[in-house]
Amino acid sequence: MKTHSFWDSIYMKLLLELLILALIPIVLVISIFFYLNQQNNTDTKYELNNRVTNSIITNINNNLAFTTRTTQSLLSSNELIYFLNNGYAMDTDYDNYTSSIQSYIQATINADPRSDIYIYADNPAIPMSMDVFYHLSDISEETPVAGFLESSRVEQWFCESDFAGISNPYLFTTEKCFVYLRKAYDFRKNFLGLIVFSIPEKYFLSFENELNETVISSGNHRIVNLSGDILPKDTLSMIYATSQPQSQTDGYLVTWNHPEDFPISIITVTKNSNYAQFIGIFLLILGLFTLLSAILCLRSLRQMERQMNQCLTAMDASISNNYNTRIPVNGNNEISHIGRRINLLLTQAAELSRQNILKETSNKESRLIALQHQINPHFIYNTMEVFSSKMKLYGHFEESDCLVAFANIFRYNISTNDALVEVRMELEQLHNYLRIQKLRYPQLSFTSDIPAELMAALLPKFTLQPIVENAISHGISDNSHTLSIHICADRKEERLLFRIKDNGTGISPEKLSQLNQMLHNAGNTPDIVSDGHSVGLKNVNARLELYFGKESRLSITSVPGRETCVSFEIPCQFL
Image 1 (cartoon, one colour):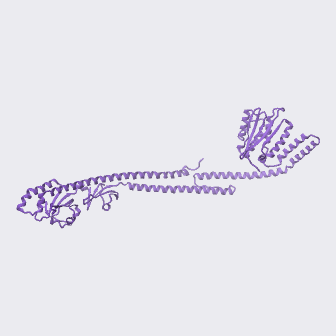
Image 2 (tube, rainbow, N blue to C red):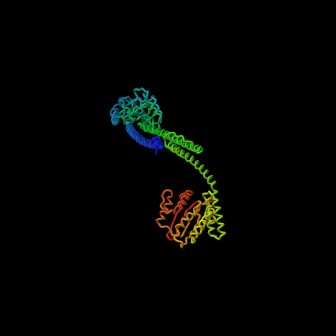
Image 3 (spheres, rainbow, N blue to C red):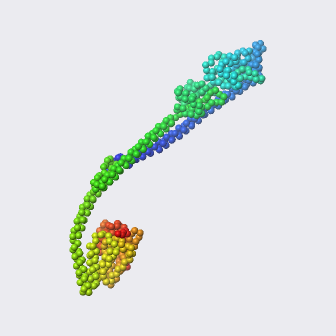
């Protein structure tokens, strides 16, 4: 019966700690799930960035190709090349200019309505007109233009930031525009000037909603903001400092791309999910759960070890102190409950020890009294010796031998207090008994088959004689019947098997079953046989069980009219 609270039990404490441990893989699995989900979400957003970037680059390439074709179309006009390469005379060239050159230039402009087209002639004789023809000398000193003219490049693209801080009324439009400069030559490779295209950025980036800062311009960078957030300056600075194709910056996914032969980098930005922070929190919780569970488990194990050591120490002290020391009991768990039960056992052990001491004292006193009264049995034995001697003087030899045998039995009974005797002595006692029985049953015969090396084995005193007595009492039906009794012993490893056989009248199956049941349930079954002849067997069976355990009980087999066998096994012991 439990006396402790369920919630105070070690089982409940360990169960709770194990539940905490069970949360660790759950948290870990959830963390992995969110991590994989974040990776999938990140890959999806990177794919969106790449798709938008590729769309913009495709649009840029289309615009570059269109601008190149338009420039080639202008340079393929022989009239324009001739016009740029020769001196201009108002009276002779004006009609050609208005009829041919002007119409061709206007057609080109109309074919590309998105662009502002400028022709900066190196020929100072050509007048400025139509907002198309300008003098190259008016802009050749500007740094970007001068650098291009001095380079070996034939064409180059510029962005608004390349002309920052330049104020020149003759300069082409640069505000929110990409500018294309192309050097013009005649067929003799004579430099004629520059052809300039100024194209608004919106045609390249395909985003017109600049009021919501979808596209952020900063120097040579164009940030396509797909996050929906207004990017702080610190975030923009970190994005500009990163030039990797893909990166994560301040909670945003950033994709970089620099189109070939174009003056800007395309940076696409999408908002990263907060899964990384979520996973970090989960991993922190995981670590806390692991630490807490380990501390609780170690604390419980330490407490159990301390209580068990206290129990063992108190038990050792109690054994050394004649079971008077008790285990200190603290708490209300299973070990405390065991400690209380051990204290009860120690109390009972102390009481049993006290009773054993009293019994031992009583036994010693009884032995002293028995020694004082041994003179009477010896007097009887000596008197029988005198009677036997007188019988021999008058020729009664057989009766004298029987009286000596009876005296030997009497002396065997009082000669020693040892509970175990040698087989040799037990056989001698049995021969004395049979010598007396032959006076009544002359037809009685006895044989034994016990190896010489087993004669020194030990068995309880008065074991064989009651069994043989029972065989004589039940085996002889009349004086004409010859009863043969045979005793044999065999050794099986560390056990001795004794068998006492007789050819008497046998035992009926019903009575045999009752007899074996009585012997195998000794002490638990009341007497079944009421004829009084089973008392000796019960006594022998009880002493065998007392000395050697239940496996040494008597076992009886019988075939009515033919044979009865009583057998038992005892440990093989020698002095």
